[in-house]
Amino acid sequence: MAKHQYPKWDLQHHAVPTVYVNALAERGITGMDGVAFPKWSVKKSLGMMNQWNVERAFLSVSCPGIHFGDDAAARDLAKSCNDELMAHMSSHSNRFGGFASLPLPDVDGAIAEYDRAVRDGGMDGVILMSNVGGRYVGDPSYRPLFERMNEDGALVFIHPNTTPTQAGNGFLNIYYWWFLDTTKAILSLLDSGFNRDYRHIRYVAAHGGGILPAIAEVLRRERPIQAAELDAWKDQLYLDTAKFVTGDAIPSLLEFTDPSHVVFSSDFPWAGKSKMAYWTQQLDESFPKAYRERMYRGNAQVLFADETVPVSAIATPSGPLPQLHLHAIPEAIEADIRALGIEPDPSLRFDIGRIKTWKEDHGDLCHVTLDLPELWLLPSGEVDQFLMRYNTALARCAAEYPGEFLAVGAIDASDEGRAIGAIDHCLEELGLDGICLFPSSDLANNDTALGPRLVSRLSQVEQPILIHPTDARGLPVANETSLDSVLLLAKILWSGEADELEECRFVATHTHRVHRILHDFIGMLYYLGKDRKLMGRFVLDYVRKRPLRGEAFLERVLAD
Image (cartoon, rainbow, N blue to C red; front, side):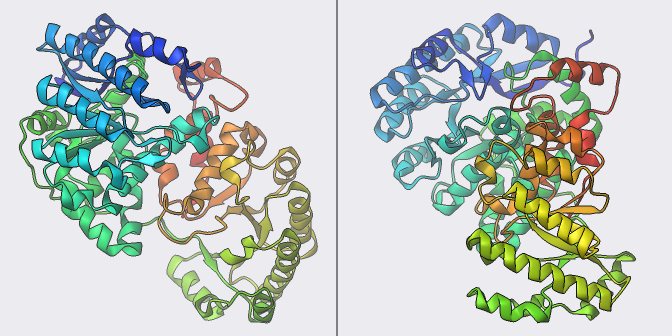
């Protein structure tokens, strides 16, 4: 096969040293989130590099990192791994660079290893896990290390890691939670003021910065001061392309930053050589040709030359997805809301004028449903009683103004039996135009998305099925519940429930385009589910150029 035409520098090229694999095996760790440690050698890296025209690769040790509760053991493991990487850098000085692993949260040990491996040993920078045991890179206790790195204008590579609360989620972590965790790590640096205080440090965020490009506009709206600081910090922040090349991913990057701050990465060997053909094809198709060589190599060369390149975004933000739903509270139930100890939002009072304006502006009927975050904190019995009254009041509004909007009944999806009864009441007794599922507030920790009985009932629903977070307020990742529409779609695929729901007319709300930016990875959860592995089917679908089942499922979902 002919070499890919563009020479490359690969910033996320992982080493999996034998000393690392053996040390973790002694702790009962043989992989990451259900994926065994890949077999790696320098020879394999060089073979991949030669095949794909990678001139230089920067080695680093990836998840699950170095520290597992014992400071002394973490110091020893970091030293052993870094020594091996430095040996490869020395013996192949024209091919390999490297990022040092540090034994955080042991700050003293991290400073000592930074001095040894980077200042004295000549490594090119450090790799930091997004979190270690739930402690993020912006933790205030890390300031002494960042002060030291700031003195040197160090390069910090931020890589996602599974949090303790997400352990056991397997591929759902790799293909969903990791993207959120990278973003949380970046925001933790802003929250702690590290962006202001350490202006000489440069950062590379793995996987396009996660969902950071998707939520930039929400950040601007919800936290304008922090958004302004992020804009001022972008000169120091680079985003890599590993696992971030399809759907709306590259356009979202170029709306967030400019091409000079996007750098190529392969994620080898966690992503095999076969992925390179697909990813480079996607990059060649979606990245502006005038900047393609810079993305593959030139930007990294400038980065390692310690030059600062100002960001001047070239793309026009596409803005939010078209709004498909409105919230409305019929005046008849405002007293019921107050009886629950909740003050109704006057701006959400049912207003047919507002609904008609939406209809005129969009040339279509709007889905109208509930939004009452405080409700979901109450006992289930009170929730059920209120939802029955709300849905009945909404049905009366629909009867009073026929043909003006789609009345969508609110359904508590946290209990299968109650949800099925509520669906029957909304569709068969009230004759509503659709239903809106509010996922369990504990969705992130549930093994299933909906449950077999509820899935069976939903498969019979011909009307639209909205998915709405119980609390959509605030900044996603700060309030992870606000992305529960996307998480529910991911869990439907991961749990295997998608097969029965393929004909459903889903409308996912408050997605912030996350399901589009990550659609190929969330889509892969169909083949890499909780209790099944269908890679044979994936290979057949891919080779025969059939629509991939997970991606096809997501593409049928309407979203706002």
